Image: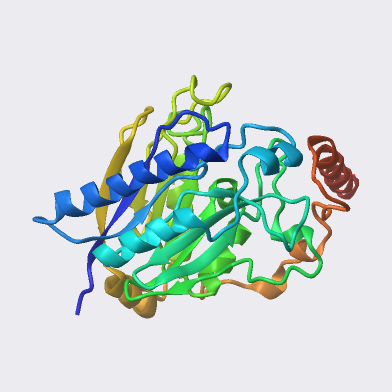
Length: 332
């Protein structure tokens, strides 16, 4: 029996917020997008899962943790996630929020880049970006703490399927998405602020390349929402949108035309069919064919953990140089 439903990748185009007081108007507009998408498509099909981009609430408009905590960071959950909860309850839908810059009393002098999955019964998972886009993002990763107390890779078991999320640069690390896959994820949500020139245009088009590859190598659906912001919103970067939905064989089911602007694309997800394919396949089942005992690179030292907080661009550059020195030593 099929349990097909529709997912929506929703892209935003807001001016950069300089204070947290600007968050409510963004929440209001994203809630309008949820309602307009669900009710507008209702005569045709049920939209049950909606994803929004990274930095939909606030972009990191400051370069230090102190400034981010002073002007933009908020705890998560908060009054804004309460609004999304009421909407999810009203429509029986699931909302992957755009990310918040999060402060947490348990982690002083730290900012996380955080998104939550919200369903009819409330918050189902909270994900903090594992791979900030260094050196420009001074946000902390769960990796920066020896005794990080939360699950860094949550997977929510829902009526729609097992849903996981990872944020933007996380997707350039196959290990991050692989970890979610081996924890059972069937629907992978990508919230992103993926800028030019690595976005949707050739000869790069990393956006499509990576989304499709992660889908096919994990036999999972990908729902990818990207910022569609013009350069005057977030100089020096422009974000080309191209939000897309990809099936478990890497086929693009729907994609927004590249270019800035607020857009929504929808496509069907048939999780039962995906499960049947996972079960019957003997070929091209990269999860079952994995030979983990052969690989050693993950046991080697990589980027050092943060030695102290707050994180700064200078301290990130020092950590990057340390990792590069190690790699160059291995190459000799």
